[in-house]
Length: 555
Image 1 (cartoon, one colour):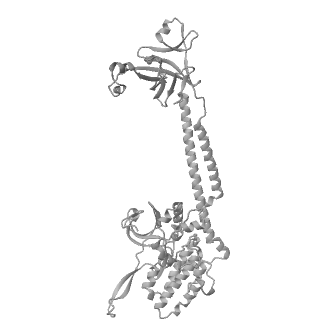
Image 2: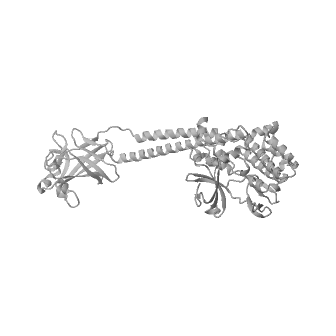
Image 3: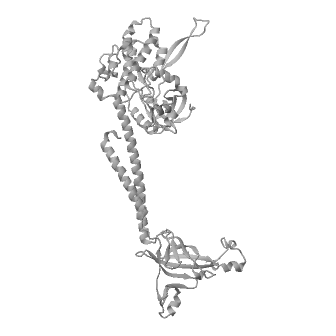
């Protein structure tokens, strides 16, 4: 039970009304928008039902159909929705009609009487407080309204399944007579929801009857045909039987208070037919039931006609029910296919976009995080991804290793300069550590070291797209600029630029070519692109076939 002030949609609870077999009932007040300040009747679906897998979509579909039901005899669904776990249905509020009831004030003073005020809201209250005022014409007026509502609902494929006096609102019309309205259409069906694919035994295990609503369930059971399974979806004959039982229930209460019971003979005969009493055949349809009402006259004036058997088959309720379930399953399948198509299209599109961007990048720059090495030597380079700058990795030359070996990995940064990749590296001088007497960690921190404490050099590389290789154009440090060259038949190496000039042509300029070690040219992004786009096309084809073959049944 929710407390007063709790928000349900755009309303807030005024007070709790009770709990029945189809959920909890609340008196609410609109809190915002057009409904602010208006009173409403709100029904909450039990949480053990609403939390079942697939219920959300089923709830939306069912309530959309219920909101279309309107007309004589139908207390309309105004709105529905979900607030957190609360699946709610909103109806107009009906305050009720005041009834003045004489009340005995004292057991020892029988002549002393008082006045007690009651509100007549439903048929149960109507028979309790105004049974002495009900005439056959009043009952006819109410039953005609109920038949109109049932007729309209059955044509729409909706059965009530839980029809009883407390679910029938009664009020006076403009002419001063009484009229009835059936409320809570579709709630019984919503509470029977079970996920698809369950066995009959599993369905029984899933269905739960709350202890607080057990008495309400038993009352509803009395207005259903004997032998029906309460776990099955309601059928048209359930509602027709319930109308007969309601008529019987009303007549029996009125006859207790009436001195002349003979005027109800026609109604008793109609009840016998409606409930199949004394071996009589129950009415086939709502129209047949209404046509048999005492003193009803021409039912065409109510917009109802008795259908022929061929017409009955056209509006067969079971067929409509199956059609609605098939439509629900088709819409679920369409929604699933659309989701899969959307996901595969998105992933395929992103992969293709990545492939295009990566291809453009590789057209202008070397493969990122890929080792380019010098054949026969340990020297190599790697460049991190970036548009104008990024990380770089290389090998320490022997010139910048105080032990003279070199060959260690070194990390630096690259940037663009005059169309070349400028790789900036630096390495700490061990002699500084020995001369100062400090440990290496004592040089860490801002201001603890200067450029004099490091070997600093810049390598300038050119990317050769045709050979997919890096060319070392030059190396610069604080003293010299080194250029690739070759002496006689020797191997290419770096020489100071001044030495090349002074060699009088003995040292010829050469190139140091760093080639990519990984020759695998498979573009996995293109592979993923083709795979996901193919999957998207297959889902689209399946969706198109489904829509073409079931177009009218798919929303």
